[in-house]
Length: 351
View 1 (tube, rainbow, N blue to C red):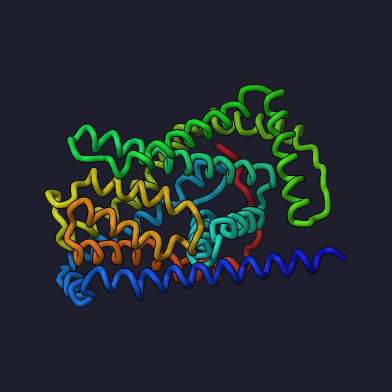
View 2: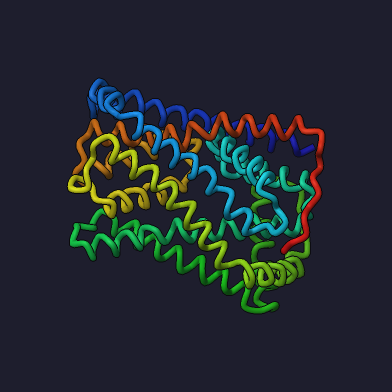
């Protein structure tokens, strides 16, 4: 049996991931941040916020959580608002808690969707399309932010490397996606290439060889993707963009409510910092980018002209509302989904 060595390797990798994540988080929150800023000043800044400011921040955070549902409704015809609500918050909580949580979150999403009665094909198509559109927006935001910085006359040298990387990856990803949809033969060639990559990964991980007909599957997948995107790509684009901008709105409000003015850090500079850190946090070093996002945002916003204590306070408020808040909500939705007696749900016909 060749399962035991593979299991040991996987466990070892998981332990290393957890250890690395814990080391990064400890270094940021107990080493770097306390040395860079007076924690007492951060606390005083947070206590100075009014109830109205806290209420508007909470409202923006709630809307941000609601915006997560919109791309799912666009990418999976027949999905109801209640179904999307349960799945979205549960998968978000998992993504924020576990190393490589995004991959585990996809598994959670798949489990929820199958429990609702959706077939595997539409589920796989939905996950792929949402992932592609999400990454297109994530890669495109540094490019847009760089253009806005240049247009406003601000220095943009720090963002230029990230924007160039984003542009190159964006063009390559767009070209690959268009190549796969442009014809049946090209889709079959792309499926064959992916099958080869998967087979090499299987050998590397010492898994049993498998040769599914990826070429035929890619052709069928292409037909389904064209049907979906022909009707829903504007809605999918708008909802994905709205979801990203809703997250940025929470950060911008946090900056303004702790006292970082437009003269210190403009909304364009805040967008540039947000876009840069979002791109860098795509590498899953810690769960949900914990520690990495806080340090990156604080450094970028201070560099832009923000006062250290106020910037750190704003970043902490932003992360509490967007990283910590979804965890108990996700735990509740998972519990509710597991306890429900009306499972599975019927799937509505696409409109």
